[in-house]
Image 1 (cartoon, rainbow, N blue to C red):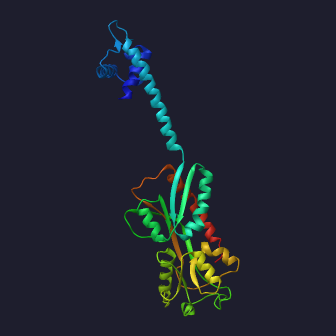
Image 2: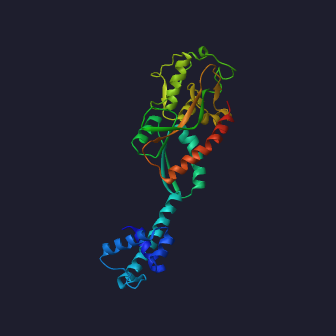
Image 3: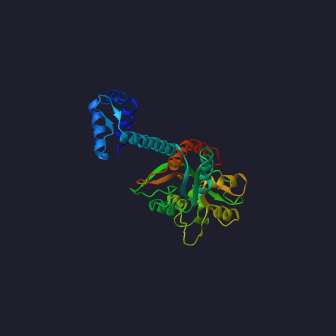
Length: 307
């Protein structure tokens, strides 16, 4: 049913005039007459008696008015309900993040997000970067956060914040106190690696290759989390390359030391990633705004960390 015609009928009934109803609704009088005739045809009843030169409701018209007014009232309530749902930020939002953004960045962001939008229900899972991207592609999560970018036309990447990778070693390592190290100084140093699928591992491979070092992954210790790597390095098992986001507190505590290696690109970008054709809820749209707002603050935090 076209509720515009109902609104026109109610206006005619309230004003008692086709011409007055036309003026109030911004219509022509023939348009008003057409809509009333269409209603009468649809319902098989004469709704307005025009025989006296006045617009008087028939008995059927009075019954029709009661129902028409009720339908229009319900329509208004429906519009208010839908408008409220558009403006209300509420409901679940699912996020999958790789190790560093999942443990050191997203919890901080989600705390502020929940404070601003208490009716939301963010759920964060942590996996390696490849698994995160798989879950985004499969539509299993609303948003992914990774340090590894795989080109895929189905995915949309946006910058989250920058990261800086650092060489770390036990505090008593003979190279730890030196101000500047060359690639050859690292020859023979055993490295501890992250597992396959880790974004940090991919960058570590790149850095080791750029330095021309012969570091055989097959014979090295491989661990499934950044925390495990830090603990192994602190225990004297070898050196590694990890995110400054994770290393900063342990460097300040003196549990690990930074090896200052020259001529390497140790920066990378964290991204949040979306499935292009997957629409976001109001909770998802609100999270994207928070991510954008927090980016300058995250950059300042990184710059303030121990190098």
